[in-house]
Length: 186
Image (cartoon, rainbow, N blue to C red; front, side, top):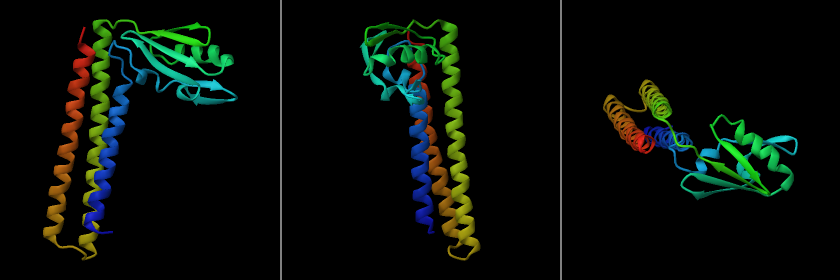
């Protein structure tokens, strides 16, 4: 494997880490209705556990209400139970083949908990980036040891690794600040 391949592979993994972080924080409540809130809900359906998306459509009715349109009428009760049991602090109400999910306003204490959770996810994502940097440098060390590259190329690889980590850590930090603003808005 060449130095270029090592760098490209590490950068692709770093992008995935940032995307994963973005997906994680999308599910954190901000007091406004967003379909991402229900992304992690799993429903016991047809003898297996399935994501809510495979049971019905989730849509935003207004700023404080989600509507879940269940495709199979026999799955309404199981879907309602799954949303209630998902530890999201939501109380779904079945209305025929639909389920109305009202998003209650967040109190100050809960908002602070969500900000803390966002920062924790951010730190986890940054740790993942640093681990990828370490892998990248380890690959460069191996190439140098096998005499495939020289010290200058290894030094450039270290500089590239540092720049990549800095770039993606900044993106994560910016997302944390943005999410914190969304959560703390009243």
